[in-house]
Image (cartoon, rainbow, N blue to C red):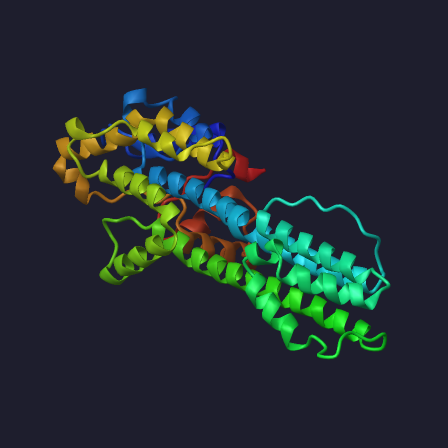
Length: 353
């Protein structure tokens, strides 16, 4: 029982464990990428004896890629949706005269073009001459700007439906203007809904892309093919991940260096992925030494490890602690906990604090 995974408690734990298992020869220790755990392990084991778990190596990489995929999701979908929502709300505030006109900085061309069209509509409706308003609006609807706009045809059709047949009148112009603005917002709402649908599909795709190809079921493979077809730019990430998992299956002499993971890194890449790849390259020898030792000692494949954090045991200990069953001394704590868990107990000095 230790308080935390730092060098002091790790050293205490390993010293007690080695003493406890003194009749056995401990040749290797497998840990994750915690530098504090490694510092404690180096008090008792050489660099060649310390292995990095392949599970933790894969987990580190997939967590980094997950952060990168979330960044890409925000860049390609979430932030674009925010811009469409912003210009919609800002247009409503302008029409209600709650805000002043101001310049907006856009990241994406689609919301920018939509906003430029709205500003042109505002300019047209600002004229006092109703004939000029009608003439300029018809010219604008048939002009290059609308024709090049992705939603131009839909917007034009909506406007034609409620265009006055006998021309604009002073009484009808306010109502007509509101309907034109509403048609514009309807078009950008369609854009937003389409992007939200893509975003939802991407959320499903990013989980299947990270799956280990060696353990995937047939239906998952079918889903993956559909996802890569819908989001082809995920294919390079998937290919690199498959190549990574493949390195644990091939003979050590055929294994490729992990430098190919650097193809995942650009200037914009999420720091978590950059850090994960840097760590994997740093400890590459330790990760695959586990694979070499297993091949040299086939019996190790069937060995059971010591689970450092056993959730079932932790829940039992927490329940025991909450009952406050007379655990006022170390001897009493060790006796009751050992009896409750049905195993010997090693208590670190930090726990006594």
